[in-house]
Length: 108
Image 1: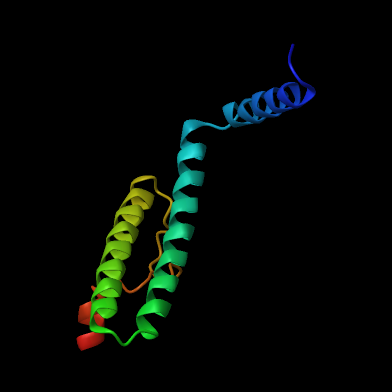
Image 2: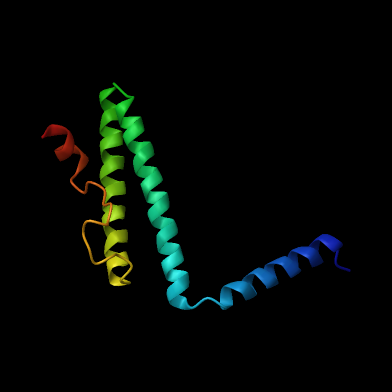
């Protein structure tokens, strides 16, 4: 015999998956990409904040690698956005992050 909690959870998940079926594949992919871009932006902000607040050489190296990694992910996601034609045509209206490697940005 199923408990009330199991029935409620089953109902919730079946209705939430039904809502997702009404979205087209392109809308789902677009929403996932926007979510990934937002997470990447936050990760980049956190990595820069961490880099700004360390003095140990090993931690500096760690944050440099992290920044480079997050920037590569950002570039990949931006290419995906361009592929889905999500980016505006005008360059002025796009607020793009600095895509130079963090070490290059810091040195010169």
